[in-house]
Amino acid sequence: MPKAVFDLVRQDLEARIVDGTYPYGSLLPSESMLVSTYGYSRNTIRRALSVLADEGYVQPMNGRGVRVLWQPVAGRAQGTMVGLESFEEYARHNGFVPSTKVKVFEHVTCDQTIAARTGHLVGDDLIHVVRVRYFDDTPRQIDHNYFLASAIPGLTPEICASSVYGYVEQELGMRIVTSKRSMTVELADEEDRTIMDMGSYNCVAVLRSQSFNSEGVMFEHTRTHSHPDAFCFMDTARRA
Amino acid sequence: MPKAVFDLVRQDLEARIVDGTYPYGSLLPSESMLVSTYGYSRNTIRRALSVLADEGYVQPMNGRGVRVLWQPVAGRAQGTMVGLESFEEYARHNGFVPSTKVKVFEHVTCDQTIAARTGHLVGDDLIHVVRVRYFDDTPRQIDHNYFLASAIPGLTPEICASSVYGYVEQELGMRIVTSKRSMTVELADEEDRTIMDMGSYNCVAVLRSQSFNSEGVMFEHTRTHSHPDAFCFMDTARRA
DNA sequence: GCCGATTTGTCCGTATGTATC
DNA sequence: CGATACATACGGACAAATCGG
Image (tube, rainbow over all chains, first blue to last red; front, top):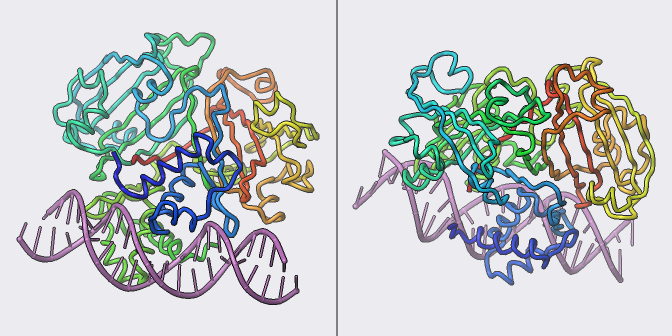
């Protein structure tokens, strides 16, 4: 999809890191080398490297070179849930067959309580959706969504049962850009225990998120309760 | 600390966003405006904006402007645990008095089992440390660390009881740069139940992380078990 | 310890493309 | 259609850190 030059370079370098051409612990060719091999300007090469560094693939070292940090997955951690990944993307990456059942689909007007909890504005016309998510027919997540109705015209329960993100991006041509999230561990509530088989667990992973579209409007608040066996969040951070 | 021009601009813009000069939902002055007010080149201004966008403060919109996404913290979420934050930084930001008790401090040689679990290399000389972390004298975290001995000369139990990161950064002049982390929810083990007052919870938040120093060497693996009441992880993600 | 070569980090000025209004 | 605003790319310059002789 992306046709930007710096992104082509990034993809190529990433592929070579993953396939072992540039193994863990080694140094990448210097910037000037990459400039001559790729034939693009140093700024463009540097931008590609910068993205790779942000994603944790490499680490640049002043005066020395760029070290490869990436290594094949350590093993057990099956779930990635990296960056901004939807339920369906997550399932696909991990070899599960995903399905969804819509339990609630209703219009509500945002009052003070909802506003405080979700970050929507009082008076907004919202669509409240509750969904149960299955991996291979086993209930694993319960989603409570509040969508900004004006931002998602034509939303139906059927769309909620497949992928709202897909609808929003492909049908409405809107790109989800930024998402703020928080993660906590909380006691499973009545709903969790009724719907999911909690086994010996009495807790769930709770992920709350606000999503902003390409216009900078917050169009969604989600609270997801995940079964501990189906939750693994991965992340890479850099320090200034 | 940072004297780079783009970072000064970033700090200034961030401050104006936080203090309400550029409120939530508004548009920042255009790049050309910022160029003339700050007196720096467009590249430099754009770099500052780019960092702010990565951190979730703003969202640039092609052809329109740069929208402010930041808003004062929504409320309850007391804990930030944002980005790369050490235990002490976390405690300070949240008004707790932190303390630490070192339970284990021993040299071990990395065998196959430890290597598979931590990502260290077989044969490495490691320092295995187990620490209990307190907020206001209440045990809230249990840390299992494996430090690469050769990367942290002079490490003592006393240093472990205060801040290893502080020692590493200030005394050794080494900067922690990249960290890869994963978060899961797991059943509290015997150790958790013995040391922490789990109340009605039977789960803990488990955070595993590998830290790389400025030479691109992995010098630490940590597994932290956190009490649910003392764990809140916040994050902002962007989509390509 | 010094010096020069190498490599990454920062910054500037300019040009062109694309999206919005 | 033109004006505005962000996105991408190029080329050049100098600084800072590292390394080898």
